[in-house]
Image 1 (cartoon, helix red, strand yellow):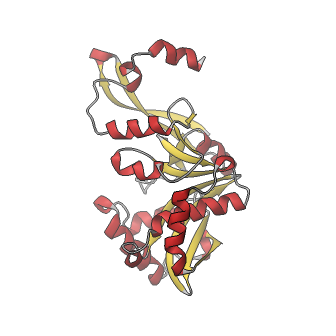
Image 2: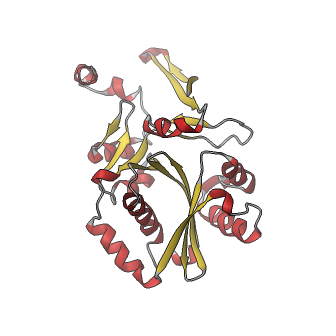
Length: 259
Protein backbone atom coordinates (compact mmCIF):
# COMPACT_ATOMS: atom_id res chain seq x y z
CA UNK A 1 0.00 0.00 0.00
CA UNK A 2 1.23 3.48 -0.88
CA UNK A 3 -0.20 6.59 0.76
CA UNK A 4 -0.11 10.04 -0.79
CA UNK A 5 -1.43 13.45 0.24
CA UNK A 6 -3.18 15.96 -2.01
CA UNK A 7 -3.08 19.58 -0.89
CA UNK A 8 -6.44 21.26 -0.34
CA UNK A 9 -7.53 24.54 1.31
CA UNK A 10 -5.22 26.56 3.53
CA UNK A 11 -5.72 29.29 6.10
CA UNK A 12 -2.53 30.94 7.30
CA UNK A 13 -4.42 32.91 9.96
CA UNK A 14 -5.10 29.69 11.88
CA UNK A 15 -2.18 27.64 10.52
CA UNK A 16 -4.61 25.21 8.96
CA UNK A 17 -3.26 23.41 5.90
CA UNK A 18 -5.59 20.71 4.66
CA UNK A 19 -4.64 17.59 2.75
CA UNK A 20 -6.80 14.85 1.31
CA UNK A 21 -5.24 11.46 2.04
CA UNK A 22 -5.25 8.61 -0.47
CA UNK A 23 -4.02 5.04 -0.56
CA UNK A 24 -2.97 3.03 -3.60
CA UNK A 25 -3.53 -0.70 -3.27
CA UNK A 26 -0.53 -2.61 -4.57
CA UNK A 27 -2.08 -6.05 -4.11
CA UNK A 28 -5.54 -7.36 -3.24
CA UNK A 29 -4.29 -8.94 -0.02
CA UNK A 30 -3.87 -5.41 1.39
CA UNK A 31 -7.51 -4.41 1.07
CA UNK A 32 -8.66 -5.67 4.46
CA UNK A 33 -5.90 -3.62 6.09
CA UNK A 34 -6.73 -0.58 3.93
CA UNK A 35 -10.35 -0.65 5.09
CA UNK A 36 -9.18 -1.14 8.68
CA UNK A 37 -7.20 2.11 8.43
CA UNK A 38 -10.31 4.11 7.55
CA UNK A 39 -10.01 4.18 3.74
CA UNK A 40 -12.84 3.64 1.25
CA UNK A 41 -12.67 3.00 -2.52
CA UNK A 42 -12.55 6.06 -4.77
CA UNK A 43 -14.46 5.77 -8.05
CA UNK A 44 -15.36 9.30 -9.15
CA UNK A 45 -12.61 9.50 -11.76
CA UNK A 46 -13.35 6.62 -14.10
CA UNK A 47 -10.06 7.03 -15.99
CA UNK A 48 -7.96 5.88 -13.02
CA UNK A 49 -6.40 2.50 -13.67
CA UNK A 50 -5.26 1.57 -10.15
CA UNK A 51 -7.39 0.73 -7.10
CA UNK A 52 -7.43 4.06 -5.22
CA UNK A 53 -8.87 4.70 -1.74
CA UNK A 54 -9.61 7.89 0.21
CA UNK A 55 -9.50 8.48 3.97
CA UNK A 56 -12.82 9.55 5.44
CA UNK A 57 -15.16 9.30 8.41
CA UNK A 58 -16.28 5.81 7.59
CA UNK A 59 -18.53 3.42 9.50
CA UNK A 60 -18.15 -0.22 10.36
CA UNK A 61 -19.96 -2.81 12.42
CA UNK A 62 -17.87 -4.95 14.75
CA UNK A 63 -19.54 -8.31 14.20
CA UNK A 64 -18.46 -9.65 17.60
CA UNK A 65 -20.62 -6.93 19.20
CA UNK A 66 -23.50 -7.12 16.76
CA UNK A 67 -26.83 -8.57 17.80
CA UNK A 68 -30.38 -7.89 16.69
CA UNK A 69 -31.92 -4.78 18.20
CA UNK A 70 -35.60 -4.16 18.82
CA UNK A 71 -35.60 -1.93 15.74
CA UNK A 72 -34.08 -4.73 13.63
CA UNK A 73 -36.78 -7.12 14.81
CA UNK A 74 -39.52 -4.54 14.11
CA UNK A 75 -38.25 -4.05 10.56
CA UNK A 76 -37.96 -7.81 10.06
CA UNK A 77 -41.61 -8.31 11.09
CA UNK A 78 -42.76 -5.67 8.59
CA UNK A 79 -40.85 -7.30 5.72
CA UNK A 80 -41.69 -10.94 6.55
CA UNK A 81 -44.76 -10.84 4.31
CA UNK A 82 -42.48 -10.56 1.27
CA UNK A 83 -40.84 -13.92 2.04
CA UNK A 84 -37.48 -12.73 0.69
CA UNK A 85 -34.69 -15.12 -0.22
CA UNK A 86 -31.13 -14.17 -1.12
CA UNK A 87 -27.91 -15.65 -2.40
CA UNK A 88 -24.28 -14.63 -2.66
CA UNK A 89 -22.81 -14.86 -6.16
CA UNK A 90 -19.45 -13.80 -7.63
CA UNK A 91 -19.50 -10.34 -9.17
CA UNK A 92 -18.63 -11.67 -12.62
CA UNK A 93 -21.55 -14.12 -12.56
CA UNK A 94 -23.72 -11.24 -13.80
CA UNK A 95 -23.13 -9.88 -17.29
CA UNK A 96 -22.75 -6.11 -16.88
CA UNK A 97 -24.12 -5.63 -20.40
CA UNK A 98 -27.35 -7.51 -19.64
CA UNK A 99 -30.10 -5.00 -20.40
CA UNK A 100 -32.46 -6.14 -17.60
CA UNK A 101 -29.68 -5.88 -15.01
CA UNK A 102 -28.52 -2.50 -16.29
CA UNK A 103 -32.05 -1.09 -16.40
CA UNK A 104 -32.76 -2.29 -12.87
CA UNK A 105 -29.64 -0.73 -11.33
CA UNK A 106 -29.45 2.45 -13.39
CA UNK A 107 -33.16 3.24 -13.09
CA UNK A 108 -32.84 3.11 -9.31
CA UNK A 109 -29.63 5.17 -9.40
CA UNK A 110 -31.21 7.82 -11.62
CA UNK A 111 -34.17 8.11 -9.26
CA UNK A 112 -32.31 8.02 -5.94
CA UNK A 113 -28.69 9.15 -6.49
CA UNK A 114 -28.22 12.92 -6.66
CA UNK A 115 -26.36 14.83 -9.40
CA UNK A 116 -26.29 11.90 -11.82
CA UNK A 117 -23.72 10.30 -9.53
CA UNK A 118 -24.16 6.85 -11.05
CA UNK A 119 -24.42 6.89 -14.82
CA UNK A 120 -23.74 3.84 -16.97
CA UNK A 121 -20.08 4.66 -17.53
CA UNK A 122 -19.32 4.98 -13.84
CA UNK A 123 -21.39 1.91 -12.98
CA UNK A 124 -19.44 -0.24 -15.39
CA UNK A 125 -16.17 1.29 -14.19
CA UNK A 126 -16.97 0.35 -10.58
CA UNK A 127 -17.81 -3.19 -11.63
CA UNK A 128 -14.49 -3.43 -13.46
CA UNK A 129 -12.59 -2.74 -10.22
CA UNK A 130 -11.12 -5.69 -8.35
CA UNK A 131 -12.26 -4.17 -5.04
CA UNK A 132 -15.86 -5.30 -5.55
CA UNK A 133 -16.08 -9.09 -5.47
CA UNK A 134 -19.67 -10.34 -5.00
CA UNK A 135 -23.35 -9.58 -5.27
CA UNK A 136 -25.98 -10.35 -2.67
CA UNK A 137 -29.12 -10.83 -4.76
CA UNK A 138 -32.44 -10.53 -2.92
CA UNK A 139 -35.59 -11.98 -4.48
CA UNK A 140 -39.29 -12.43 -3.86
CA UNK A 141 -39.91 -15.75 -5.54
CA UNK A 142 -38.18 -15.15 -8.92
CA UNK A 143 -38.53 -11.37 -8.87
CA UNK A 144 -35.34 -9.46 -8.00
CA UNK A 145 -35.85 -6.94 -5.20
CA UNK A 146 -32.26 -5.76 -4.78
CA UNK A 147 -28.67 -6.16 -5.83
CA UNK A 148 -26.02 -5.33 -3.22
CA UNK A 149 -22.43 -4.98 -4.38
CA UNK A 150 -20.01 -6.28 -1.75
CA UNK A 151 -16.25 -6.07 -1.42
CA UNK A 152 -15.20 -9.17 0.51
CA UNK A 153 -11.54 -9.29 1.54
CA UNK A 154 -10.26 -11.54 4.28
CA UNK A 155 -12.63 -11.25 7.25
CA UNK A 156 -14.00 -7.86 6.15
CA UNK A 157 -17.00 -6.95 4.01
CA UNK A 158 -17.77 -3.57 2.49
CA UNK A 159 -21.49 -3.02 1.83
CA UNK A 160 -20.65 -0.82 -1.14
CA UNK A 161 -23.69 -0.08 -3.34
CA UNK A 162 -27.30 -1.24 -3.13
CA UNK A 163 -29.88 -1.05 -5.92
CA UNK A 164 -33.57 -1.67 -5.16
CA UNK A 165 -36.89 -2.23 -6.84
CA UNK A 166 -38.22 1.16 -5.76
CA UNK A 167 -41.88 0.09 -6.02
CA UNK A 168 -41.50 -1.67 -2.66
CA UNK A 169 -39.77 1.14 -0.78
CA UNK A 170 -42.83 3.19 0.12
CA UNK A 171 -44.69 0.30 1.75
CA UNK A 172 -41.77 -1.68 3.20
CA UNK A 173 -38.52 -0.61 4.95
CA UNK A 174 -36.62 -2.65 2.39
CA UNK A 175 -33.38 -0.66 2.53
CA UNK A 176 -33.11 -1.03 6.30
CA UNK A 177 -34.00 -4.70 6.15
CA UNK A 178 -31.46 -5.58 3.46
CA UNK A 179 -28.61 -3.76 5.20
CA UNK A 180 -29.51 -5.51 8.48
CA UNK A 181 -29.85 -8.89 6.78
CA UNK A 182 -26.48 -8.43 5.08
CA UNK A 183 -24.81 -7.70 8.42
CA UNK A 184 -26.59 -10.65 10.02
CA UNK A 185 -25.39 -12.85 7.15
CA UNK A 186 -21.83 -11.66 7.86
CA UNK A 187 -22.22 -12.74 11.48
CA UNK A 188 -23.64 -16.12 10.43
CA UNK A 189 -20.57 -16.61 8.23
CA UNK A 190 -17.95 -15.55 10.81
CA UNK A 191 -16.74 -12.27 9.34
CA UNK A 192 -15.14 -9.67 11.61
CA UNK A 193 -16.36 -6.33 10.23
CA UNK A 194 -18.90 -4.88 7.83
CA UNK A 195 -18.06 -1.44 6.44
CA UNK A 196 -21.00 0.83 5.62
CA UNK A 197 -19.38 3.76 3.79
CA UNK A 198 -19.13 7.36 4.94
CA UNK A 199 -21.16 9.16 7.58
CA UNK A 200 -21.46 12.92 7.08
CA UNK A 201 -24.34 15.33 7.62
CA UNK A 202 -27.86 14.95 8.93
CA UNK A 203 -28.86 12.78 5.97
CA UNK A 204 -26.47 10.05 7.17
CA UNK A 205 -27.83 9.84 10.72
CA UNK A 206 -30.08 6.91 9.80
CA UNK A 207 -26.93 4.76 9.71
CA UNK A 208 -26.21 5.53 13.37
CA UNK A 209 -29.51 4.30 14.82
CA UNK A 210 -30.02 0.72 13.77
CA UNK A 211 -26.97 -1.43 14.43
CA UNK A 212 -25.22 -2.56 17.59
CA UNK A 213 -21.43 -2.75 17.40
CA UNK A 214 -21.16 0.38 15.24
CA UNK A 215 -18.04 2.56 15.28
CA UNK A 216 -16.61 5.31 13.08
CA UNK A 217 -13.12 6.27 11.97
CA UNK A 218 -12.34 9.61 13.63
CA UNK A 219 -8.86 10.26 12.25
CA UNK A 220 -7.17 8.60 15.23
CA UNK A 221 -8.85 5.20 15.15
CA UNK A 222 -12.22 3.47 15.45
CA UNK A 223 -14.48 5.34 17.87
CA UNK A 224 -17.60 3.67 19.27
CA UNK A 225 -19.14 6.85 20.73
CA UNK A 226 -22.34 7.17 18.73
CA UNK A 227 -23.24 10.39 20.57
CA UNK A 228 -19.99 11.94 19.31
CA UNK A 229 -20.74 10.73 15.80
CA UNK A 230 -24.21 12.27 15.90
CA UNK A 231 -22.81 15.61 17.04
CA UNK A 232 -20.24 15.56 14.24
CA UNK A 233 -22.92 14.82 11.65
CA UNK A 234 -25.16 17.61 12.95
CA UNK A 235 -22.38 20.19 12.58
CA UNK A 236 -20.89 18.98 9.29
CA UNK A 237 -22.68 21.63 7.24
CA UNK A 238 -21.50 24.50 9.42
CA UNK A 239 -18.66 26.69 8.11
CA UNK A 240 -15.69 26.07 10.42
CA UNK A 241 -12.99 28.60 11.18
CA UNK A 242 -10.39 25.87 11.57
CA UNK A 243 -9.96 22.11 11.76
CA UNK A 244 -11.78 20.32 14.58
CA UNK A 245 -8.65 19.73 16.68
CA UNK A 246 -7.93 23.46 16.89
CA UNK A 247 -11.55 24.10 17.84
CA UNK A 248 -11.35 21.71 20.79
CA UNK A 249 -10.99 23.26 24.25
CA UNK A 250 -9.10 20.23 25.60
CA UNK A 251 -6.32 19.91 23.04
CA UNK A 252 -3.73 18.80 25.63
CA UNK A 253 -6.02 16.03 26.83
CA UNK A 254 -6.52 14.84 23.27
CA UNK A 255 -2.76 14.73 22.66
CA UNK A 256 -2.16 12.89 25.93
CA UNK A 257 -4.82 10.31 25.06
CA UNK A 258 -2.98 9.53 21.81
CA UNK A 259 0.42 8.93 23.40
